[in-house]
Image (cartoon, rainbow, N blue to C red; front, side):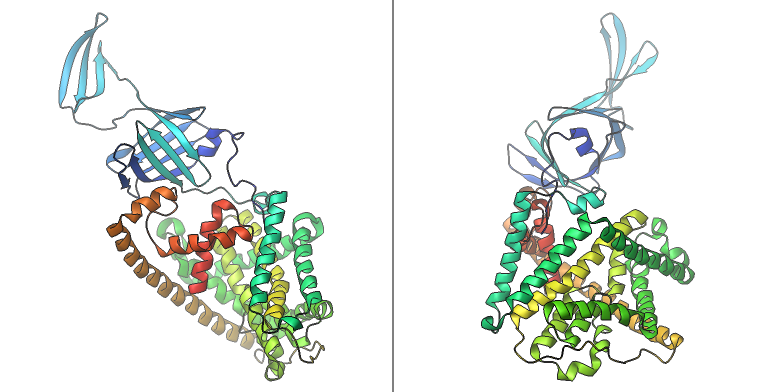
Length: 511
């Protein structure tokens, strides 16, 4: 179940607080001709609600202009400090106004400034816009029949409150509808609908719901996940120490920008080595055994299935099967499917740490928030994987319910385990980097074809206007986002984000 606290910005929130951000201009549409002009990446306007100051940059007018702004009802009033920071004077006029002599300087018919009794003076340049739309993502302004479309380049800071959202009957009904639709899809593809154990399905769903409510509303559970999340954040700090020794100044994002290979992939390597050491010491096995024992008793799973699903919460699809290596050749089709689905549904520890680093950036608070919620999502995915697996291929054969961890060892000593884990982590990091490179290259190639189609058919301008700048052209992301957006709405994603989440899911499926 999911909810959205701010699907639309409420009018009770002051406009100047909503507008306080950096907005990039996507397009300008003339109301008379209907022609849409796509704008440069350099066109933006930034508002600061604390000082009521704005900065404006138009690619054809350098340097940056600035001034003050005010908002009255739905009107935006801009007062430029000076329309011209630098300009050539092509004409001058001497005038006497109210018995006061003036020398007025012009540039192409526009007044730049004027001399008044040995003093330099100028009339502030003003512009007034009507605010047609203002959300967290987009801003639409209009003036004299021309509409300006902007998108927000500085999304709101993520907080626990924003992630948890607010409760409403609509959100509850959408969550229940989403669960029903996903279960129905699995039921339609089931190999043996009569053999489905609905008791196990209900128990699995109940575990998920109880976990979700506990993480949100029960302080001890919140504290536990925050503690585990802080351990992941600390691991990122350890990784940074090793990366700084090896890469030095290349980690400085202020100098070289954000380099994915140097910032994210080292996390996967170190976490893989750490996992191997913990596996060698038997620590992971004990934690996994406890979770597996609970799952086997509650959901009537075989011992091997339980170990695999529990192991996948912390380990990847290469390490987790080591705990059931002795049982793999004896497992039936239903058990093997659960092993595979469990690996797909959860996130390996190394990749989880990489996500935390990527999403949280350098902010320790953001890192902790993402660590807590990503970890909770990975744990909640385990019973969900069991539910879907046991609907698709129900268990019809006799199973061994004994929970016994395979004695398979990783390395002959700690150093050997660390070395083997490092090698596996390096392979995984190289695989992640190579797949991302190829994936983005193919996306660019496909989008090039769609871009040309959009140019020939004039679809690009229509898409930019209809999507409020979220998409500026016909692309694979646009097609996937809107094709899967109904499903995203059904499962509870905020209306503002359904196309984005649909796009991400589509990219995940085709990748």
